[in-house]
Image (tube, rainbow, N blue to C red):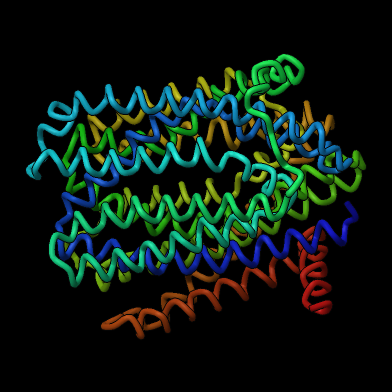
Length: 512
């Protein structure tokens, strides 16, 4: 694929992903507010906990989708349809077995719900209903729509966004209206959740076969083909450790909070995590639209072009993350007061740690390149990350409460993601000294620090009182404009890679 085509597809993915991410972010806040006002914070905490329990069962996926994506880049680049069908058949065969494992695991787990939710004041059927609907939705994804990996690997992520994110936005809108105006609000919420999952699967399945009419994997040959494509199994075994670490990082915190504190605290934490994760997801979903392009670039094998793009990709992502985190740090509390009231505010220490967490998550630039190179053999790193994450969260949470739990997550992230991953990519992927990366990141962080200090000093002169959402939006615009301009000037003046990035954006806009 030529660079122009790769760029065009990436832009299309980014544009669609950005639109739906912002739309779902807005609808998500309304949905959460309606849930709290009409059904109570405990229902919200229950829903979060049920989602995290399902995440534990989804560990059975083992990281197969990532392994499949890696193996699809080259045959897609070469238009080898026979190999693509074979690889997707292996995925479908594996996913059917995973679906059975998750269903069995979910059934066993529900037997322990009276004990797991013993502190819950809600009727126990709420827990069974929430978990059951989420479990069925997961089953549909594994059994019906596993072939969407071909769209993703072929840089057609935007088609997945139209179906999955589009129907998710419609689902949230229907739930907001239903809970607010109909009786039996939670039953309606569950019914919509189930119904929209089935509709999404139907339309996504149709889109896949319109895009790839030649994609007809024979699942009955999946076991036999797995012996031919042994790399998929090998990479999957390696990826299990990474998958486990990702679960521990993202899904266990609410469970630990519930164990030490309560479902209400889970809801308060969840409100801020919704804000932090939603904004972070806007960035990651935008850049995830480039993942297939990165895989395609690496398949071409031009090392100088790969390194040049990595530097440009890294500096742009760090800059965007710093802009968002500056706004998060200065505007989140006032937003929470207007959104759901002062009774749902986090303490300043926990909140600051969450902003740092958001910055680290948004700047995981090495992951996309590690996946594109197929470098999953560092199984000790995610194992250590998971142990540190879980152990430190429990230990520090016992002594320091919520801030301790978040600190445990953050420490494991900093050690593995910010220290080990860059070394691993540079030594095994790029095969150049890691000092190049340290110099790059050191320079970026200096520019961010200077920009932040100057902007924070100037921001204090702005009237920050917000009595309405209109006031909040105006203050937000001022904060965004202030830091955006200060940091833009700093990066533009002192970083060559950033100048290349802005020039690329200018050329893209010029061509539109």
